[in-house]
Length: 97
Image (cartoon, rainbow, N blue to C red; front, top):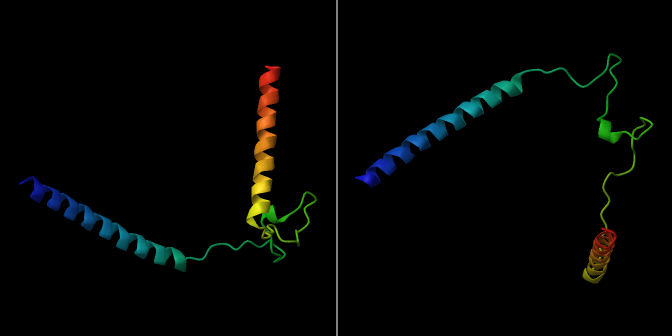
């Protein structure tokens, strides 16, 4: 009897979930058709995001993230150096306190 109750409860939950999914998809399609004000000033010039500006307010033209590949040994040396530096600071802080 308890199994039937579980099956009934999960069936109801499944119908509710599918109903919410369909409702959200319909609302999303309506939201997509709406027109929102664009991100332009009165002079029709593009206003960049603040993270794309330097301290003087000029547009940054170089890449924001540069990744280079290093081999495993170099990565281990860098991580070991960071670990040693952080553990040395902890030892100094403990000696001072």
